[in-house]
Structures are given as C-alpha cells and as structure tokens.
Length: 87
Image 1: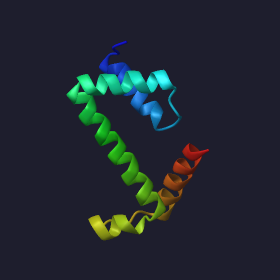
Image 2: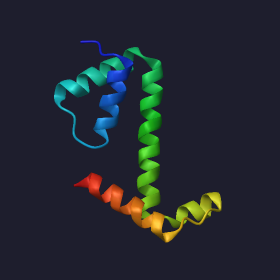
Image 3: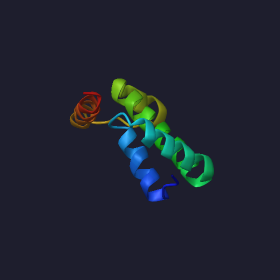
C-alpha cells in the first residue's frame, strides 16, 4: 500500500492533468499523511498551479504584484497551455 516519494510525486503531477482513480488518491493521501516532505511539497505544487491559473486568467496581476509586464506572446502561450489542460 505504501508508495515511494517518487511515485507520490508522479501521482501528484498527474493529478494536475487528469482525475486520479480512487486507489491512486488513497495511496497519495496515505503517503502524504506519513511523509511530511511530500505533504508540504504537494501543497506547494497545488499553490503554484492555482497561481498560474489566476495569472493566466488575469496576466495584469503579474505587473501589479511584481512590476513585470509579460509580453503578449507569452501570455497567449500560457493561456493556450492552461486551456488545453482543461480539456
């Protein structure tokens, strides 16, 4: 039942792109319960993913928060990449 940190990382990464099966979720949650490093890392991955989605929806936030103006070319690429993940 216990999976390695490498397997947990793989499942976490895949969970951003697809819905995990019931047993994959159980294994990942059990591992995160036991392994504080993976638990922390998982929370960070989710936080970064959410931030990227928010910035893709409103790229002007980057300029407001960090004083950085992202070129239109890269804004478009980010939006397209995130949109393809939602399919």
